[in-house]
Image (cartoon, rainbow, N blue to C red; front, side):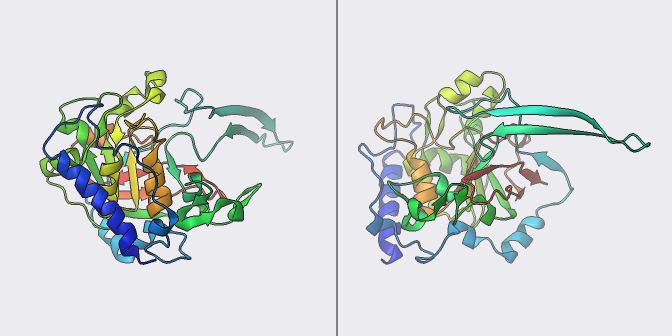
Length: 329
């Protein structure tokens, strides 16, 4: 299937929705989501633009030249950590958990009295804290990215293909799009759908440009609830909607991230759509999602571009990985 039909499908949807709201400030009920939205059929989304056998998605765009360009953004050696601390008091979505048990203290028998301390952690290690989603984390029906049936690659101990262990070190240009700052708000209201117009205005305000193989991060301010009001944090959140996600993906990022738990708005204004941006990014296009980021320091310092560094855990066949990403300035 030529990739024109797949890209044309999303391009038309994005431009139609974006144009309808250009220049308007959306509210939670003023959504860009197309009523009755449903995922495109396999004939419109497969094969991937990278070919029928591709398993890396937009990560294919990250090359040595891009990494070198990111390294040149490091000017003074400062590091801003973008990851959350892993601890039992974190907010959790659904039934996820993080239990840490300290194993104290084993004293070795030699006369130098070397003692050893360790811990046992019980958690969905790929889906707690600041976390990167791999492609098998989400499906459209019984298919993951590039129309691969998940039953064909799933095992009791993980996925045979597209596991988080296949992603590797990510060094690229990071871009912070500060929508909360655009609105003059510390935290956008729950359920606020970030529109294409919001993104365009924030990018213009910050004098940013979006480049191929960047990592795009959206500051909603929702991260201020982390650890202070966990119930509110997981009850819902502001975030990008379908049109905004499609608009961003047209600019060819390798990662979309945010300081909320799903990157996208929740609940979706179309109550018949369950986290559709997850399907658009991970399943349709092959763009990874990075959730629960700590973006407040970047926003407060008005940092718009930076070298972004991240190394997922090599969990064999994992659906995701907790990560500790950094902005290097």
